[in-house]
Image (cartoon, rainbow over all chains, first blue to last red; front, side, top):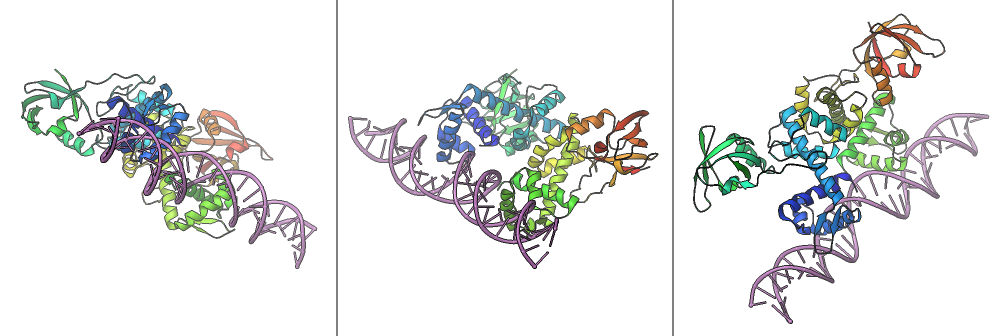
Length: 217
Length: 217
DNA sequence: CTCAATTTTTAGGCATGCCTAAAATTCAAT
DNA sequence: ATTGAATTTTAGGCATGCCTAAAAATTGAG
């Protein structure tokens, strides 16, 4: 059983666990693009290795050591994303994909060097918090831009990192973490938002606004 | 069959092929630390994939496409070595080991970015030539420091990269590629060399001197 | 040119991690 | 409380890439 596979499972379990609590076989299978049957099998092995607790038909949960590994991988992933963006100028819509591969080959020594080079950063290019070496991180605001009211001035805190196309779209409007924007109008019935960024106005679809976390100013 | 495994085989075949010509199963097995029986099996698959030519009991040779891949991996390896040294300050005795892992996850896009960042370099930190995107490279001098005579002034061109301890030893004396040194004395019966580097004298064992390529000045 | 030593291949096995089809269990609606 | 739908697990299989032991081919010393 290779590291890469285990790490991908633990990372996926972590993601699901922190967003929706219980981690069902099917949810894991969907995220990993693996059949549910295979997931069941693998999850048993992870359980044997004390990385997750598993009860038949009841889903899994990370153990302490499973959580530790998941957070290490997450740290690698986000450090690499930032490193690629800063050191190599990789556009923010591409860093995720690359980091998916690099995260599994990063030694502790390289991790430390990158961390130091970047000045011990706490946020990746999408605004997601980077766990420190002890797995601690400062959580981001959980306010969705989509839920805010017209008239508000907010600052972008974090953006979902999975959809490359969305990231390019947002980048085109200058919508990055730490950027301030005004909500001019919110169309009713789940309609689009009209926003003002750097003195320009844009119309932002509801779907996009649901991928953006903000804090109030 | 994963990329990593194929790439490691092709790289090993390349190395043996360019140093000793024919590539025997056992030699490959020794280098890869895999049993000869397993190598035979794998080599058949590589042959099926048209990456090597293989005749039972006669060893293997890279085909054109096998050579192409081997050179790509070599390019990745050496670019990464230099990148780690330059961008992250990794000491030259550690870059090889790290590059062994990174080389397999480097996309073409990242390769180009690193290449550009480093100014399209032609030598890695050990002085080994970096193939360009077409697999072309300028070969280094094949003169061994160990074969030179007393009184010569030479410049280090390349150093073998596999032995971390040797590299630390050489680094301690300031013996890096592009460094000039004088051979003051060569002890007979395969004895050590006395050399002068940056106005300091050192005694260099025969074994070490056999790992260093130079050009005459 | 022979035959013993060496090299290489074949045969048979094993672990990993994936799959599909079918069976077992849980869930939810009545 | 029942039952049909959905979820999850079990059973059986497959490809990859490694292993050891034994057989086959090659090599080289006399």
